[in-house]
Length: 99
Image (cartoon, rainbow, N blue to C red; front, side):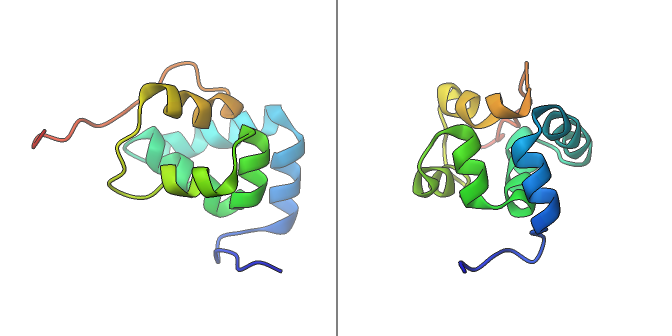
């Protein structure tokens, strides 16, 4: 079995992978705890698992892993691909003051 984050929970992962409504509700609660949607997605992936999340997004897991690395610049279209399976209609991003 592949290495998993300590936050990974098999039963929760299975439930969120299969049930879109629960996945959307769970992510909406995560969004309240993080300053940006990208941070919330990182936390969500740690809980659900990279392999499972990549299946939901219909993207290769290596791409999802690269997209979620800290400091990675993402296009809006990429963010949309990452957030669309989570029922996100509008995104929250932080703009670095150094840019």
